Image 1: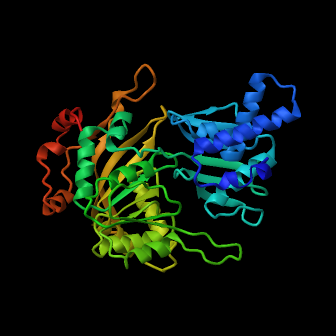
Image 2 (image 1 turned 90 degrees about the vertical axis):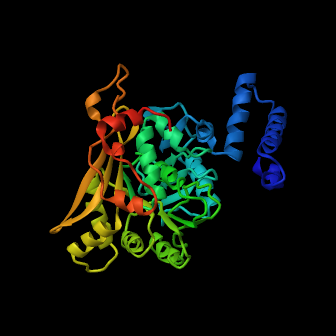
Image 3 (image 1 turned 135 degrees about the vertical axis):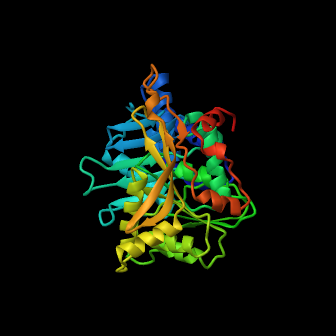
Length: 418
């Protein structure tokens, strides 16, 4: 069928709808010649399935087009799960066999110039819409291949969306905006699937439009709409094991590109050291994410990542760098009701002896319990502590009144409109 369609499949002048119509016409003609004994419903389903296979991603194509689905997880040819509204559920979708699934995986990774085979059985890639893809095949995937796709909204979430989802409230949103505009260095922390990249994207949207922003990612996911944005993406080694460009290489290179802001999608290795050094050498207002479950865990995680840079640095020296560079940790947690919430906005205050001192400025109130649907009622509340970085914000012309940090006044502002 692909041979018969020939160059039509690669004709850039055809819209997706025109191309799909041409393919379906060809399939109708082929079925008419074969005179297959199929009912009208079966024939329509067959044409739809084959069209999805040729033009899209087979059985999961319709799942990827469903805006309510945020993640697609393929656990082998017969098991396909999705995440919808924070809950994981099994679908009726399935592939014909492992070969069918593998063909779809090859199609996905091939679109971005990546490869996956027994010599390199792991692969990270992305779909044209920016959705993040991870694939694992034999011999690592027992019962696989496995495919995980983290979907990204066609229209990236804005702060209003996060407020509507309950991730934060209006008062804490205004505070986060002040921190970004005021050029504080911010770490967004959380476990897998807590919404770190989404939150990083929203925070980055607060960066003024006249600043030069350089983003560094393993696979491009951030969707910034400012005019002066340069996006850098890491590159894996080629089949000969050469040509790799790491996140760390890119972070170092950003310093030669006259950035006003550096935004790193995720620190997961030695690039953490380069990021801290950038923050400490005049590149204020930098943002990144780290996998960690609490603000204190974030500091321990960063310490480990810095050691991965390969330098024999004393632990105290690393902690002094961290305490000097980082202003704030924004902690995300995925709660058991499936929602993703900002649970801490924590200031990094400095050093006392060999320990980095922190102070929670805002915390999620778990004491409000859950509603009849099992959803947490709580929201962010002020702890009553005025952070030291309020003076740094004042130097940038951003003055926060004492009512921002008073629990009673903050609660009134939290209920207000963004």
